[in-house]
Image (tube, rainbow over all chains, first blue to last red; front, side, top):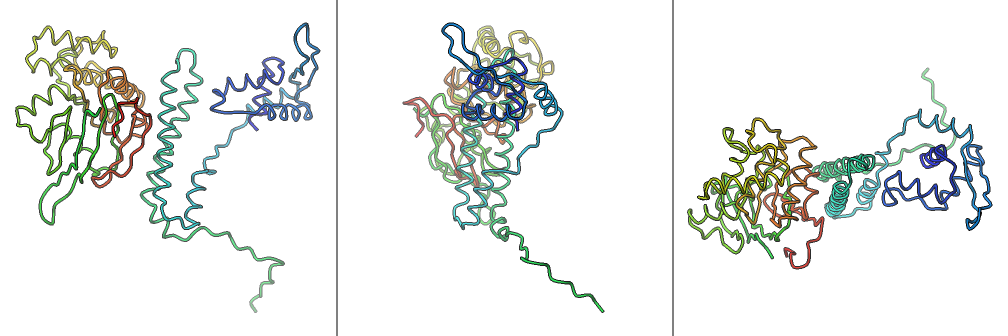
Length: 198
Length: 237
């Protein structure tokens, strides 16, 4: 899973405590608005990484005014896990689409105004595209290029989603005339013995 | 305040059984400093609409109001004058004159309107410099990239200080990077220089720069999406 390995990567830079790690994660993924991770999730992930032996935890008693904190550091096993992650591909999950789920549910439920569902979605995507474009325009390509590339990805995919809605709109009536996808029927129990031809 | 208003705007081509309604009782308003994108499938009436707004074609019925003037009541001379002073046009293929340099092209509308050549060129230079073409003033269109040519065309559209810019697929002939630059520039024209911009486009990415998208289908308003709210007092409706 990506978050786990990203935390490993940040720890390979230098040992950090949980709060610091969360802030560093937020900074590299383009802020909390683009990928929010709750503190509980960070601590749970660190616990799992510790159990797996990828990370060790040292208690820091704190010097002077500093409070005691748990400092996490990457282990050699952690390093090889990180390398394995760098060496593997990341599958895209385009077929798992929340809007498609809404639309097909509307078809199944016999919803009359599918057009409206498409229009609302289109408006939502255009507003997102407008906000992304505006945000991109405010970034400085000389120092924030990584964030710009992330926004480019978001812009390209949002644009593709809008074009996809246009495709759906054209064929909406046709979709409604076709049978609703049904679960495959699997007979229960032992399969019947096939009768052998004489 | 609305700079542009249409009232039940209708355009029919042909007559009788073969009549085609390109635009069907369309009413809309565009506020000062607002950027609006017109979208829709080919044949939806978006080009017809742009031609009617620009006084390049006359409606079968209905009215177009620009800055308080009813276009449908103007005679040819008045219409020409309004087009020259209140409207700026931007096209897909830039439509620059090949034998004139950037400054001469950008100065053309005010030169034709009788402004002294030196003054006209000074105004054109000012706009070209704002659009980052200060070092390309004497270049011919053939010595400029597509994006640069379109920036000259936008300077030409603005040189007479019009209230409204009409753009027909302004990025249709440009690559993605130049398209983004031109769309951002048109947004700057609306927001910084307070001109209203009406732009026909089929590109979602370019439409997303607008404050509002109007979707046409079969000559009618099919849908409308507000992307950015207008400051109080500038709302179109």
